[in-house]
Length: 187
Image 1 (cartoon, rainbow, N blue to C red):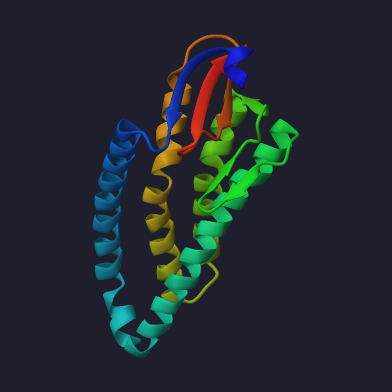
Image 2 (cartoon, rainbow, N blue to C red):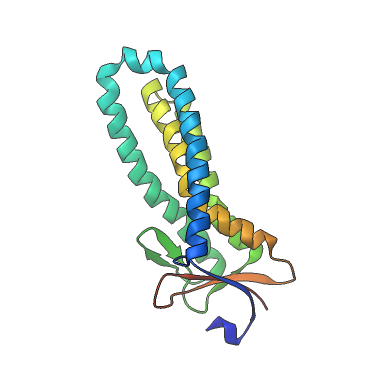
């Protein structure tokens, strides 16, 4: 669609083997870092957790609720800026939000849309953790850390978009037969 009107710089399909491989590699690296940090936090907070062993079930329930909330909130945070910037309501799917056909946004706005869920969820959960009891505080911090690898696709595409040189770079999505095509192009 857009390739007939614009000069395509690069196209990524989320089901492409190289894209998947790079995303999984980034997820694994981030997950290892996160696990090390969680291990350190749990060891630091061990006395709190062990003294409240009856709250371990509560802690696991908190984590489950936070995980589901985090997934939904992550996509909602993508949804509204995409709608605002493209002036067309994006398509909301299971674990993704994409621009509608013939909708596009500028490079800077796309970078903001990719990175906003990471920034909002990190700041919100860390800020909330200061006002809650210690077991919920640990749950929020662990959820923020778990969210980081979940953002690996956003980080990867932000980096690729940031590296695109030239004037009037924009982003669009197309839905081919398999996966989602993310297109960086210039007008």
